[in-house]
Image (tube, rainbow, N blue to C red; front, side, top):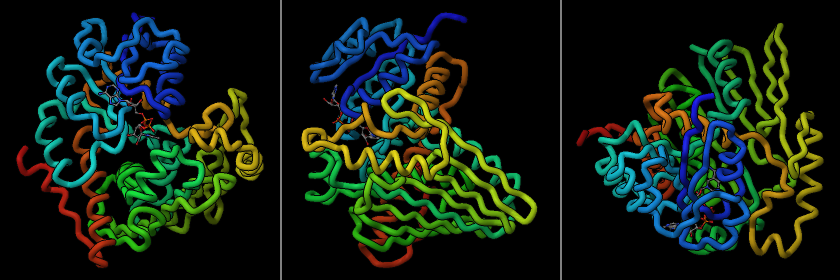
Length: 369
Ligand SMILES: NC(=O)c1ccc[n+]([C@@H]2O[C@H](COP(=O)([O-])OP(=O)(O)OC[C@H]3O[C@@H](n4cnc5c(N)ncnc54)[C@H](O)[C@@H]3O)[C@@H](O)[C@H]2O)c1
């Protein structure tokens, strides 16, 4: 194998410690050289050569080919400025930013670097979604299509800061999380929505309906009032008298008159791999839910024991490595893709506030280009 790609990470918080850092360490083509966080407590557990609080030091290191940024959006402007200054490909966690004005400013700031910004919408890299996409194109394309996406979690087990931001301060999960699904629908349909309508709470517990060109209609059921003892995500596509059902990244079925196929995808618990029906996976989720201790709940991260379904996080890190190493020339989820998900989210929120269907104008992203 050719030389490993040296990468660095800035923003090593809860999500990053449970996902990106372990995935980068497991990737044989990656040499994870530096971790940077304002709070470096506990980072020594990863045995990475350099730990720093100075993000400019990380960007300035000539050996580092690309940087993974897993801070929250608030801290990203300076980080994006450093990526521009040192011309380093940058992975930024979703959401790219918050409101419309900030989205347009971010596009303006980063447009010359658009191809080297990779926004962390991981789902399209998951094995189940890749297969769903292929089956959809092969069997359902070109006809009226309905898509259902369920993404319902449990706010009770969130990290306290996230609970406070969403439940008490009313930040919206439409921006925090449903942006994932707007981007996934773009991946599946190849289009942006022509209309969006939101009913529900605005911050949490919403039903969002989107119409796409070509007679494709999607509904997203996005809540946080369910139980993590039940699978969080479910995809259903109906078109051309064919149904594709994806059960929480674990099992995919396609059914038509003379067609039935089922595929299963491995998931892990505490490093042990399982490949089972989604019904058996549900039993494991119930066991996990009933075992959560008050101490774990007070921190809000359960990466050691929770059921890890494959949502494409490791694969997106590998694709980012390829971008950093120059093996691919353009980010698959670039600045504009990240910004489009944000703008759709803003319009979904506007629909909720104004209680009407909105027709998003995504051309505004390109007006100053
Ligand atoms: N893709 C997914 O499936 C997924 C899942 C969960 C969270 N996320 C996203 O990951 C991001 C982080 O979420 P989290 O829950 O881990 O947050 P967190 O607050 O636990 O972590 C953020 C970290 O960034 C550090 N930080 C902030 N400013 C910094 C700076 N200037 N220099 C260095 N470090 C700095 C903080 O100290 C903290 O450790 C969010 O954008 C969130 O939406 C993505």
